[in-house]
Length: 270
Image (cartoon, rainbow, N blue to C red):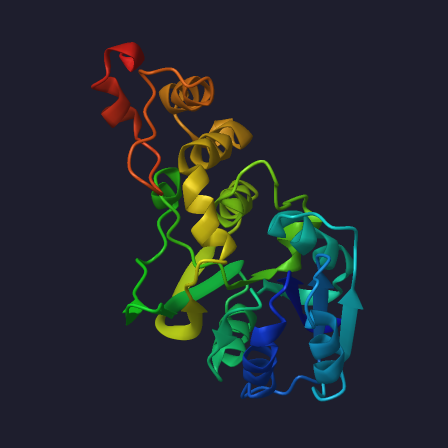
């Protein structure tokens, strides 16, 4: 079995290919047991040309280039690539970001040494036109996912979670958050590596940047997708928010209200 499958969902990000694939080629571990699955979502730029160029340069076990019908959202594109993956471990990585040289080494070593851990994520460096800083995430706490996503989008995890039925859903723009909730409910154990092991670039074409415009609905769908993970009053809030009821506000961006906060609203008091 392949040790690791790296799935790269792409749409018109050919201009970042050298940075992305260069960071994969520069990893401190051998890529002999690593496969790269590049899934293009109907790009009109030179993305496929760039992928083919790098397929001939990176000395990995396998380099697949897939071109499914246009989806328009990264979740189904990731699912398509994951369906083809044969790795013991899986990583979905955005094509406009870059790995630090020891990302794979640190992540895989932890999973190999700690069988009870299912998902490994790390801090990361965030780069935008305005500023650059290290985003230090908290150590994992399952309760965090009930209010906000504190797991990095770039995480290496065991394929048993995928084989068990966890999938990216396209009915929420916060697809990563929803995915990690599913992993947790499937019994996944998470561990944070306390150092910045990749670089996340912020720009106006980021799907995550665009997703913030759908904040309220995206959060409500996470709750309704996973009702067993949330308090009943939070599930009612999510349903009411989708119906645009005035007593079910969005709350702040990237934050799902708690049952205690909702209890302050007359509508959600027991």
